[in-house]
Length: 284
Image (cartoon, rainbow, N blue to C red; front, side):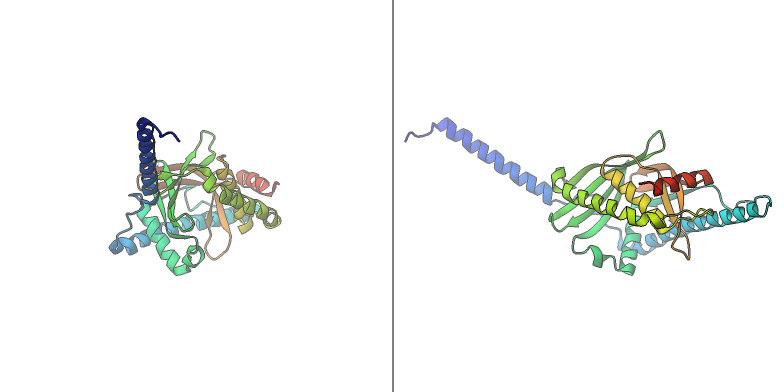
């Protein structure tokens, strides 16, 4: 048996060394923790930040409740041929949260509602991070044994349609191929699509603007389904009403993501827009 030339042995050794370095570097990137994930909320400020976020949630809920009340008053006035009453709230409302506020609020509500019991088998330390034009959902995913993050680029296009495009998935600081999570995405889409027909018969939006839970779930499910296919969806959000399971659908008219802050501008729907929305909800 002839011996390999020294040059070939040298080349083979260099290639093996390069592959080893590549494997070590890839593993290191995969197991590393991104800097933005390793910056938790200051414990001394957590309670105050959660309180600030709750006050903003309450303010938005109060706006939705007054909006609903104005619609009821207007409906009653119309039924009795009286002039429409003056409205008590503006037609638009701004909502602004910082990353730290949302993180502190999630931690508080997670403890109060025992959310961890539902997700602890799959993930640990879920985080929501807001960067310039990007929204990141991240957690320590047990099946992947790494900090896994989903990077979205939410935006409104020129037609006012909402895009929730998933631009990349990372394991640590390493980009992950679609094949690693495609099955989970397909399963989620299939589950949502299978539930929509059962929700459709009870889906309704009352004349006063209040939507049933099933109408909300159909709309939000279709938003997730379209986002999974990188397709635009109607820019509709639902604001919960106090002392009822119903919510008020509103239109998202402005969306801004700066480093550490999310700002939304929502506007009430006209009766014609509510009718059109309900037709879409009930359509196959």
